[in-house]
Image (cartoon, rainbow, N blue to C red; front, side):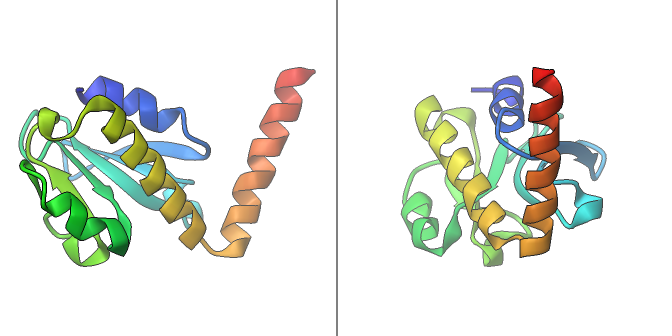
Length: 131
């Protein structure tokens, strides 16, 4: 696993946008930040630690922290985010599943109005790509 693989996985999910924040952190958002989108994953683009942080929800938080190489995400742990200290802390398939879960959890927390706007944009894009 590496930043490029994470980028491909995240950008393949619905409504995802990517930004660079804090100089070297790739931030993956469900929806545009300006439209009320929320972040669900972060990677350290300069190769520092942690390599990947993501939202996991209250139920999964303590389970993931029991694994070697997983720590509470700096500045985001109280919101049930975990961080991988190294790329092999989880198997690639597990990382993919956790990112999908993180995306889904954040999407569900978005206000109805924001979700409706995202779904409308997605529907318009699908219709324009067919014709």
